Image (cartoon, rainbow, N blue to C red; front, side, top):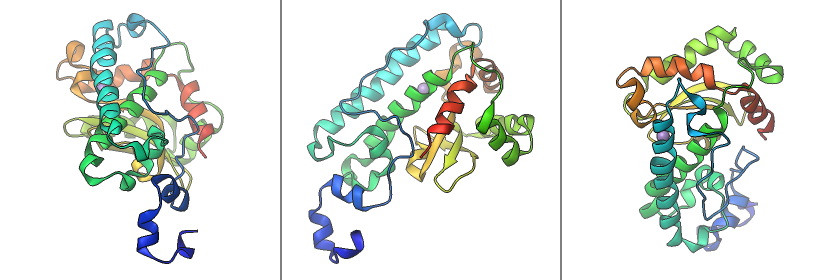
Length: 237
Ligand code: MN
């Protein structure tokens, strides 16, 4: 479709919606967050993850940190009515349609909203403690074993310098990959759908674990709901 248009001027006249339709990036995730963004409620009490993540950390993390990402994303998007029909996931998959002056604000704050929304859903004791079905098969074939996967993921989380996230992602071309991102950068920016995400910003663990990020990473495995990860993997387009 884009190839038939034939001039840069014609492309420039297209709306953001049209450019995305003509371009590469349908987001890989089925669930999308529409604008204006809304702070989610947890599906469990703040103390549900004790002793692995303490209630105070959960409360501050959701009601202060995540809320700031939601508020700042909505504020930046108020100035960009041409983008109002784009979901958070579509924006992150197509940041090139965002004016340069607002791009970093949306990368950080829309990324923060999507990343944290996913994180809350992935946490909760009571799900499977190990992957099953297609996700288990894909982990075994990609990493050799569940333990090898865990070790590689934990290493990505512990070696991310400064603030960021560790991810298990499903790239558009198929398969699975482990990576880490800086700040609130989303794997959607690189055409990969998150299956598991671990927040390794100090705000995620400092009250309880102080500088001991490795202990927090070990605790994460005890509260990761593999049923949710399996559903995310199954929903990747
Ligand atoms: Mn966080």
